[in-house]
Image 1 (cartoon, rainbow, N blue to C red):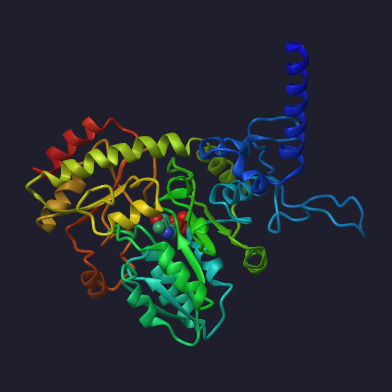
Image 2 (image 1 turned 90 degrees about the vertical axis):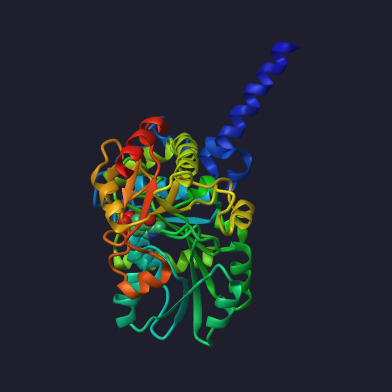
Length: 407
Ligand SMILES: *Cc1c(COP(=O)(O)O)cnc(C)c1O
């Protein structure tokens, strides 16, 4: 009896495996498993059973039939290693199609590339400096109009709406002040007004926040950060909620051609496998550090959605599963900020975030150097502001060195 049962279980399992793994695309079995398990799916190579996706280091593919159609014919248009990553990010974000790009900025620029001259977009004020720059220089020359507003208040988004507004571009928590935008409210407003809503989800990753599930249309990532996670790759991703949007992005990806190489894709696939454990550890450290900074008398302010006093925390908790691993703080003077950044040993003073190393960045000279100083000042991005991305070091070592660097 028991044997029979076991036999039929084995049969059912292999049938399920056959159906799920081999015939249905990852996106459609999304609901069957928890996030941590989804992270490990990208290793499956059905042809050989390899647990690591092969690096298809090739530009072109032999045609089987000159009159036939084949999935891969040229690696700018598609590559099996890239497809593994694109399917994986679509699965993680719960979207229909994923797209990989040569950088986060290539992802953002390519997504903006579905708009046209004369279109207007509304953006959050303190978005990533590079996104601000491409919108207000390159795309401005091509006739894209852009209004940056404080998206913490939906009234500001509503007031910026014009007849030619076509998209709403959000980042929450924002960079570098961790300001919170209510995604459901903003995205609903976008839908009611036929705007495409785009969310840069780099800070949160799909582990902590999935904007498409809240109704957003497109999610963008700098996979250079938490998804890659090891400071060894530059890569960008986009995911769409609908096939219609996927059909608009693909021609830009293929035509503009800002696609990543297979080695970088492979590093990103490998990084993604440990996203959950890295994020859990870094987030825990970020919480410890945020509380510690709040207690220091040399510190003017601390910005972290995990702190009880953080503006927008209630909204953040509603739309995300954690506070993340990025925080910012302000020293009392500019000299203190410089002294802090120049006296780090375990943590690194560097551009970027989301790595195994703790990274302290200086927005005025790094991520937001491209923003005009008066604009920066208005947004509170001062020369005393330091952004910190918690890594995997022991938090006690970090606290000891921060204590010394603040002295
Ligand atoms: C780093 C970053 C980008 C740009 O990504 P790159 O991979 O450096 O091109 C975009 N958005 C956010 C929030 C970022 O942190």
